[in-house]
Length: 138
Image (cartoon, rainbow, N blue to C red):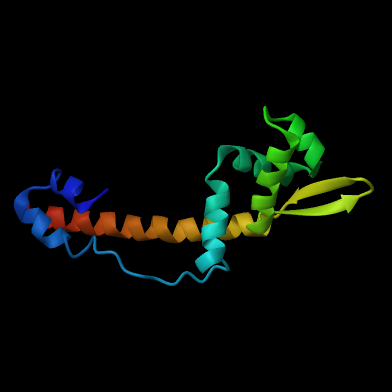
């Protein structure tokens, strides 16, 4: 929520104290997922088909061909999705005979969750601070 839209929800006097609380700060997240790695992971997970592929191969590895049969798109399109996921470290591929098998990487998914947990806690703390400021005005 932007500060302009937040302003519409708060009385004038309360807003003065909160403007400091919603200032964004750079922070370092030490959870094994930082910088360009985080960008790759969240870019890969931004697509619904890729999220579904990750869910599928976390349960059981599948060949790229088997994955392609699950979606209304070409083999090449599914292969590109798998390549994006592999580049982000969310899946790995290995050869088994003539097939390329895709396996989910739970550690990387946990890293992504850890990064999101940091942001969730940041916002929960900020909401608690806003509640405290609003309670003081009454």
